[in-house]
Length: 159
Image (cartoon, rainbow, N blue to C red):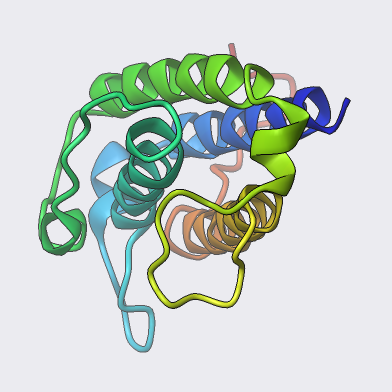
């Protein structure tokens, strides 16, 4: 069923987001911006958490989540452990919510009609998945730009 495949794709992308957040060797660099890069990797992570908790958790899963979009772009230096925990919670929420959708719900109108072109739940989920992967690429780029790998002497290996 499409529901299970969508849930798997969201889980895969969110696990990649966890890996990107974990890959910052200097945690403070996750929140820094430079030049034309206006959003840090940490900010993008917080934005994705808010976006998906709202559009999937609150709208489809009736989780009660209240989104504060402006704060997604103003908060700084959230501990990495907190972000990773929130990603894990979101993976579970999306997996249970999306997998539980009926075919009728999936093909039917998305419950929040906000003037966007994707009118069905299926179309909105595909757009949300594309949005997640777009920002995931930005987080990867930010991490590699701001926190390049540390060269270790020959014979020394990372743990």
